[in-house]
Image 1 (cartoon, helix red, strand yellow):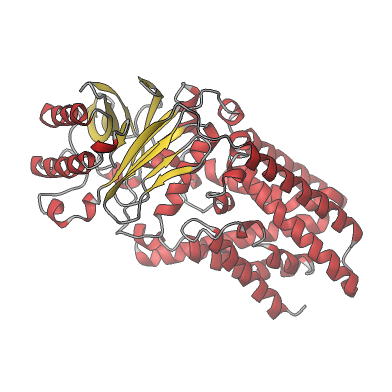
Image 2 (image 1 turned 180 degrees about the horizontal axis):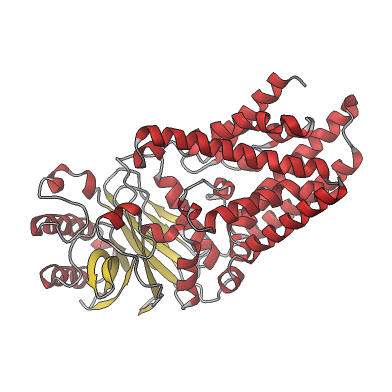
Length: 490
């Protein structure tokens, strides 16, 4: 096969994998998207692997990280898109190198183990954990049968399965090419690939038929998309930056807008109503908290709002919940703050995970970027939360491409920990999610409105909630073993 053809096949894999990702959402393509690239790698010497993988990496990064220029200076944003694309190509090159130096089942597992281990370490390691690289697992965020593995392994297990399926299909193709005189090992590859694909298929079928229907006891969550930071009238009332400098007029305008949206669904009698991350007022300003409590009584619902809490530990971006009786139930400060919030004077909240009793289950609270950290929702679930409600801001200059990636974080955290979730956003995708990662209500990007969805609570903790990132660390250990074996044998 000519190099030009291999490069075109690599580019095709980049296009296909992008098409499976959040925002594009063409079902199931992710499970075979890398096959053209992996076939090209499999029939090429290791010295060619990086060059062949580069079109794939660049196209994928352009497709899934095109919002970088909205959060960084544009030139830096474009540079980072290219840099991450070269990183993806390097991951493929490394996995291909391992494959070329191993045999038997280790050869089949080399790339899935390498990819999932590297993804996991990058996602949790200090400093680089703040570098948002889209995960392979995100290609399955709307595939509930596949999401059930998250409750056992977390996202590394899903990335592993998707890559393993791609490698197995590529193995079948390569075994056929071997019969045409390319000198590729044949029957052994074909047998291992067929066994692997059969096991993956059985797992997905079992997960699909095991998904339970909603029980008799359910509750409803309403979630607002208020577009306050795209609203010229609100922006005209004063500087809106989520700090104590916000004018009383700005805070009142935000409250009035969200109150009107809240009243618009009162006739549907939602049990919880989740507002966006808009820091609408000081948490202890009675002028505004009394209005919030009065609104909760009026609509007979729990309301979760986003406020600024001037605590002894500093200024916190905070989710606050009030009951239908007009009482504050609790509050929890955002842990995973952004650099911009730090510049504005916010500090991370304490690593404490209180849960609050409600008529429908125990509630944990979180704010926006908290859902991007694996441990925060997990610790809330360990503390007994079976409902997690989050206030969210997804607005990067109204960019429509980022919100689906952030929304997928909510789906993953729900499925990992078997918690019901409700997320209200300023401009992104407001969601109601059941404990199995199924979306029961979904808002529109950059469109003001309210969604109402039905969900339910599951009391039993998952294996992932109890044992955390065991599978990710297993992949790291296996990768070390494969590297040792590869270097020992050659």
